Image (cartoon, rainbow over all chains, first blue to last red):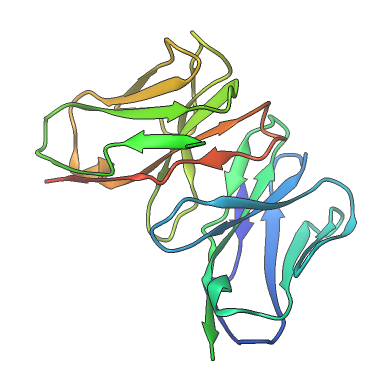
Length: 109
Length: 113
């Protein structure tokens, strides 16, 4: 079966750094997405990794290790507006997206 | 620029009733998708379309039908609503295939009593 694992919930402090992990077991791999979803709103695209390594985009970075079936999203200088769910999605061998259940990130002052 | 617009935003149905959810995008995207999102689960693909006049089944197509008569619109129909179809439904579109970021609508919250 295909599986995407993410922690259900994480808590961090405003101004700090947090790392949200995603591990996957899928039939093939053709890329990994991270999306942000505020409560009651639509998911919005954050990043897309196809090759191993770190992709930096402002305060957000995404890392991929294909050999380990592992990715993480790193959020720096946390702000209250970063309180949201973060969704990991893997593009499998059939080019279909398999979505994780998401990690709810709570930012405390 | 509206992006992806879903109507209605909320709806309550009785078991056995039918309804249609409308999705409209103004970005000239070829690909459109319908997902459902349930607590504790990832987004699950119901149906998708790779262009005007085409549709294909996703992971959980049973009980739903779709049509893409115009490029900008993608309709999701529930033929005979069941309580198990209570969910939040999201429409999304993308310029190309699944390697492209998807743009989502704000969702339709549907309750089946």
